[in-house]
Length: 116
Ligand SMILES: [Zn+2]
Image (cartoon, rainbow, N blue to C red; front, side, top):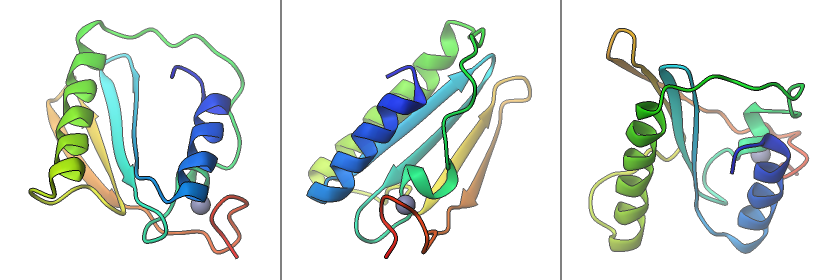
């Protein structure tokens, strides 16, 4: 999905049904990847409170390929129980330097989707 409002809908459904959500986003030569696994991790809404203004982000064609392939790997691991997924983490990929970073994503107790 290419917009945040639709991702919020999917996030809400995933959280209500306890279905893992493998989230990926891209722009330019950068991408992000996260696995939200209810009820154990934060959800998309915990770190993106509201949709940003609608903009068109230029994306280098290979960037969705990089992030999309990693989403598939995470999904296969979830389905097969093999390996360790990015539960509770946000992976950042910078294609300009070919650097990966991983940050912890903390659950927001006041999150409108997964909070109290
Ligand atoms: Zn949340």
